[in-house]
Structures are given as C-alpha cells and as structure tokens.
Length: 38
Image (tube, rainbow, N blue to C red):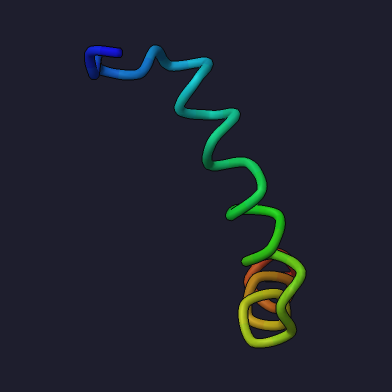
C-alpha cells in the first residue's frame, strides 16, 4: 500500500489519543488549568 499524506481528519484521529494522553498527565494538565484560570 502506497503512503499518502494523511487527510486532516486522519491526522486528527491519529493525534487525538496522544492529545488525550498528554492532557491526562498531571505534568501537562496542571500548567494548562493554571493558564486557563488567568
């Protein structure tokens, strides 16, 4: 199967688990919520 550049939707589907995992880690989540408060 030939490689083709992923569509935007495919890229989002592939990155969503990584994003959720990153947001679930306390190291990332705490600064994120601190910046949200300000």
